[in-house]
Structure formats: structure tokens, C-alpha cells
Image 1 (cartoon, rainbow, N blue to C red):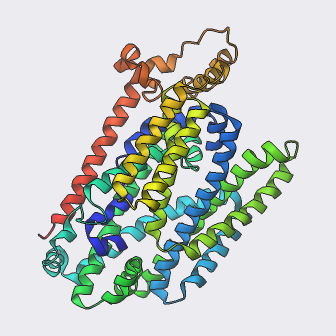
Image 2: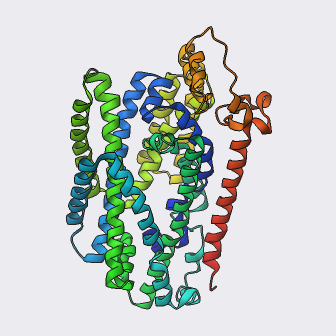
Amino acid sequence: AGATYQIGMAGIWYQWMWIFSTPFFWLLSPIFRRMRYVTTADFFEERFSKPLGFAYSLFALYLFMLWQGTIIKGAATTITAITDLPEPWIIWGVTALFVLFGVAGGLVATVMTDFIQGIFILILSFALIPFGLEAVGGFSGLHQLLAERPQMFSLIAPKELTLFTVTMLVVSGLVGIVAQPHHMAVAGSGKTEMNCRVGWTYGNFIKRLCTIGWALAGLFATALVVQGALSGPMLDAKRELAFGAMVKLLLPPGLVGLMIAAIIATVIASCASFMIAGSALFTRNLYQRYLRPDGDDAHYLRVGRLVSAVITVGSLLIALYIPTVISATIHFVEIVAFVGVPMWVGIIWQRTTSWGAWAGILVGASSFLVTGQLLAWQKGPQLLLSLSVAFAATILVSLFSPPVPEERLRRFYGLLRTPVGEEENLAHYESPSSPAPVSRLAEEGHSLLIVDLLQLPRRFSWKRYRLDLIGFLLAWLWVVLLLLLGYWVTRLGA
């Protein structure tokens, strides 16, 4: 909303950067489910090596703290604009709430609250629209008030979010989406592969729809500044106050309270889930693996609770010191992409090695750092070069380094080629002398395009890949419909 207030509807791409990644969730969900891992760190350890799993675990803990801090910051900024309370007070208050909730209620309470707040987020996303339209005189009034700023209705901005920058953010989002540490739980915990596909894909399409409501709120804020109803200097100094300022100005008291409740519910559910996931990752992939492999469940539960507190302290510090939500979001997208490179290559190409994975991450990240900090490149060229050299380094170093042991590859790809429901076939992949079993489900439509990508010329048939193909094409239809809806909204009243 704040970005849209300043640069127009193009600000929507700070969330829509994932819209083109969403159809790939249909293809990726069964891959995560078939891995049968608990955390994404398990992938790096089982596919590549223990050192890489260890390094990813540390990186993921930082990502959890960064994402929690970003959520807290966004909520605090909005509530501050509504209530005029100091932002640090709000940060401390919402942090205390989700810590108490997460530690006391655990995963079950978090899941239940996450379901309820999903309803709240829909209310939060669209509640402002009727009041905003009334205040600006409908969509025609909105266009009249912004008649001297026609770029506000364009989905591409002349600066900040140019076409090239948007394209590279979309690419980075797609590359990094597999490496986000909570996605192993999101896409891997469904009872069936279809549950995972539908839930992850279409749950995220609902989020992309909600983004239109947030972007419209930013446009209303710009129009109300022109009208004189909102303080332009205040919002120009800190544009992310726009949504909260709109809530305070437009909504009646009861709905203001509901909006604050919706925001706090979102923080509690999201941050509690990240806190629990982060503590689980530390306890499982670091503490149990390297420090105390023989502890009982009660001991690991105590460790998890202690680590939750540490993660929370880190997220609190990030929330207090990050300049804006957008800057933290872009930082997240940039750094996670370099870890996503070896995940994509490691799933598609069996020859990918641990050395190649290390090279891709380090070369890509170093290139990004040099071009950004020393050469001061623009975001688009910076991401293009860094991701290109990351993929090249992963492939080249893999070609010239010792291959991954055959038994490790056999076990890993055995998981990916064993649909849920045919677990009895997994035993065949444990023995090098056993022939690969024939999967009835795979032959009847459950084969995976991404896993078999390099073998498609000899393996492809519509029957074998029909679930991937039908679902992927339908998901792209929804992408087109959402883009058309976004464009149509910009033309209403013109």
C-alpha cells in the first residue's frame, strides 16, 4: 500500500513478484511431499552433504528471524499510524503476544489460529475499498483527482519498479521459492499429494487477489492527499504509514478495532509458526545432529522453547532496526535466490555435486555483493548477472568435481519417483542390486515433470504427466485472469 501510494499501481509487484511462481507450486508440491523430509535442511544434507545441511540451517535461522522481524515491523508501522502510539512500543507488545502464544499453545494452537486469521486477512484486505471509494467519489473521482499523475494507474513504473526490475524480481522469486525454509512444511505436510498441490497453489492465488485490495488502498491514500484529507508530508516521509492512516481516517471505530485485531492475529499466527519452525530446525538439524543425539523428547522440547526465545530476540532486533518493510522483503528475495539455485539444479540434474552447490551459492552471493556494494549497479542488472554466474558455477564445478555417491542419489531419486501411497517401493531403492520398481501411480499420471525434465524426450507421454500438465496449465489461466483483473481495476472510471 505504501509503495502504491508513492509510485502507483506498479507497487503491487512487491507482492505480485510471486504471481508467476505460483503455477510452479503445482509442480513443486508433490516433490516436497515425496521427499518425506521434516525440514529443508534435510534436503541439503541428504542430497549433498552434512556441511551444506549445517550451513543451510544457520542461514535458515536468519531467514526466520528476518521474516518475523519484517512482519512485526509491518504490523507496528500500521498500528502506529492508526493509534499514534510509538512504534517501538507496538513492536515490543506484539512480540510478547506471539511468544506467549507460541510457547503456551505450540503447533496445534498456531495452526488453528492461522486458519482463523486467514479469514481476518480477507477482511483486512478489502474492508477499506467501499469507504475509500465513497471518500474519493468512486473510481471516476479517483481518476479525476489523479488526472495530473496518469502513471499512478500503470502497472509498470518509470522508476523503482521498471519492467526490467520487475522481471528480475519475478525470476529471483521463482529461483528462491524452493529454498524458503518453511516451505518443506507448507508443501510437505498434506495427507495426499493433491492436498499439497491445491492448498499451496490456490491458497497463494487468494493472497495474490488480496494484493489488489492493498494496492487500491495506496491509490486512495494518494487521492486523499491531493484532496487534502491526509497529510502529504507525513506519508512522503514514511510511505508505509499509508495503510494505517487510511484505516484511521475512513473506518468507523468498531471496524478500526476489527482491523487492529486482524493485524495482530496475522502477526501472532505467522510469527508463532515461524518461531516454532525455526526452533524445530535448530533442534533437529543442529542440536540433535551434532550436540545431543541421544536426548529424549522432553529434553528436545525444552531446547526448542529456549531456541524460540533466542529467535524471537533476533527478530525483535531486526524489527527495531530495519528501515522499511519493502527493503527487508527485497533483501529476503535476493539472498534466498542464491540458495535456491543448487536446489533447482540438484533436483533436475543428477550430476550436481556438493562442490557445485557450494560454488553456486558463494559465487552468486559474491557477485551480488560486489556489483551492489562496490559497483553500485541497478537492481535488475545486478540480479541478472549474479543469478547467471550462480547457475553457471553450479553446473561447471559439478562437472569437474567427484560425483555424489551412487547410493545417495539412488535413495534421493527413489523418494522422488515414489508417489505417496506406494511406500512399499522405497525398499527397492535401498539396495543397489534391486531393479527400479514400476510405479503404477507414476504411469497413470503422477510422474513429475521437474524431476524428469532432462529425460522427457524419451519418457514423455500425456498419460504419464497429465496431473502436472493439467494443473500447471489451469494455474496459468488463473495468473492471466488475475493480471486482467488488476488491469481492469486500473481502468475503472477512466
